[in-house]
Image 1 (spheres, one colour):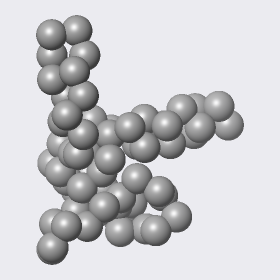
Image 2 (cartoon, one colour; image 1 turned 90 degrees about the horizontal axis):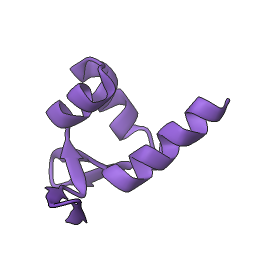
Image 3 (cartoon, one colour; image 1 turned 120 degrees about the horizontal axis):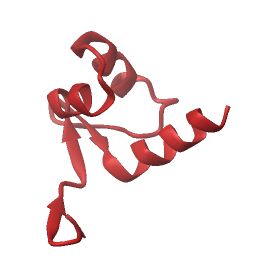
Length: 65
């Protein structure tokens, strides 16, 4: 976990948290997390997660375009 100003942030976000974080629907979030090109998706068992740090880096790159 990452500590940020007396607040602990989870390193991994589940599908629902990714939806809220990005403001997208569940289908789109799952499609992104399953795509190996995205670089931030992670599968543990049958569950999909996003690495928060890699997701933020990906967002930064997308905003620069």
